[in-house]
Length: 488
Image 1: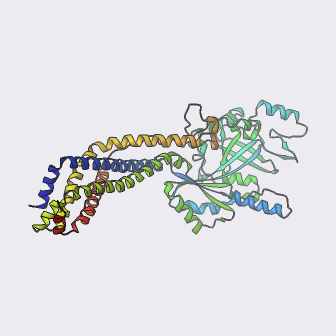
Image 2 (image 1 turned 45 degrees about the horizontal axis):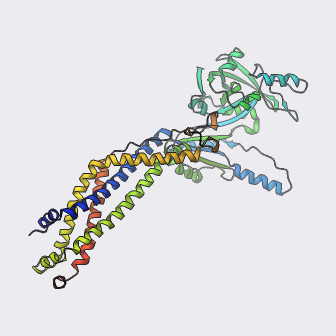
Image 3 (image 1 turned 120 degrees about the horizontal axis):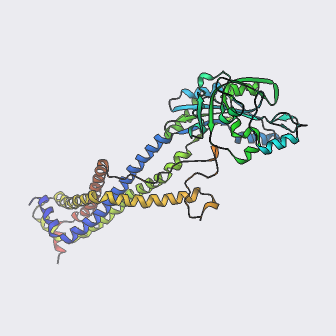
C-alpha cells in the first residue's frame, strides 16, 4: 500500500490522537499568525509615523565641552566666564546639500532697542521704568554696569515659515510675505500685529533699532510682513519688555548677526536640519563627521527623534513582544508536537516492525509519519487562517493598552499621577519649546496578509517535519526482528 494512502487511513483511524494534534497545532499556528500579523501592522504604523513626523538634527555649541573648558579655567585660578561661540554660517551651509534633509533653518538671536517706535510694555514694567528714569534710558532699562538689556527681541532665521511658532500655528502671517533665503543680506523684518497697530505701522514702512550694547550700531529695517501671535508666552517673560511676544521681530539671520557686531557677521547661533526619514539621521550625522569642516571639538550635531520615539515607542514594544511570541511558540510547539508524535510512534512499534519485515523501506515509514503530521498541519492552518485575525486584534489591543499605560506612567510628572486623567505627552501651560507634543499611536490596524499566511505555512511545515522526523528516526534505527521480539 502506498505510504501516503496509509497516512490518510492512519489519521482517520486514530481520531482521538489526531484531534489532539490538530488542537495543539492550531493553538501554535494561531499564536504564530497573531505574532506575525502584529509585527506587520506595527511596521506599517511605524512607516506612516516616519513619513508624518520626520526628524531633525541641530548643529549647536557642545555645552558639555564648554563646561569642561570653564572647569579647566577655574582649576587654573581663573574666574569662570561664559564665552559665546558662534557657528560659521559657511560651515553650516555645507550640510544643506546632503540628500537626507528636506529642509533647514539657521538661527541667530539677539536683543535691540527700539529707536523710532514704542515697544509693547505691561503695567508693572512701566511702573518700574518710571521709578528708575533717573538711572535708565529707554523702555528696556539698563542692567547693572550700564549695559542695557534691550526692549525688542530679534529672531534671525533663514525661513520664517519653518520656525516652530509658524509650523505649530502659534503664529501666522496676516499681511505681507515670509522671510526666505532671498532676503539674506537684506534688512527686512516681520513684526507682530499688536506692535504694528500700536505704532500705526504697515508693510513697506521702515523702523529703526539700535544695538543695546553699542549704540553706534543702528539698523533700518523695512517691514516685509505682519504676523499674529496667539501665544502670550511664559508669565515671567511678561516682566521683561524684550520677552513680551508682541516685541519679537523676525529678521534674516544675516541682519541679526550684523546688529550684534562685526565679530558676529557671517555666523549663526544654531542650525536645524529637517530629516525626511528618521532612519537616515545616523547616516546624516556620520556623513557630516566624515566630510564636513565642522569642528566637533566645539560643536555637536544633536539628533532629535524624540517625537518619533514617543509616537511609535509603544507599538515598537508590542512588535518586539510579538516577535518573541513567534520564536517561543515555534520552539515550544515543535517540542510539544515532537513529544506527542514520539508517544504515538512508540505505540506503533509493532506496525512498523511488520512493515519493515515485509520489505517496506525505512524512508517510506518516516515519510508516512511526516505526511500524517502534515495533514494535521493543513487542517490547523485552515483554522488559524479563519480565527487568527480576530485573535491577533484582541492580543494587540491588550498588549498595546498595557504599553500605553506603562508609557503614560513613565512620562507623566509625579504630581499628575493618581488623579484619574491620562497624560498625553503635552504639559498644559507650557508653550513654544517647552511643550513636547506627539500623538502616540493608540491603535494598530491588524489584518492578516498574504505574506503572513505564506510565512506561517513555511513555519508550520518546518515545525511539522521536525516534530515528526526526529522521533521517527530514533525508532526506525531498530531492526524488524528486534521490534517484533520485544512485542508481547
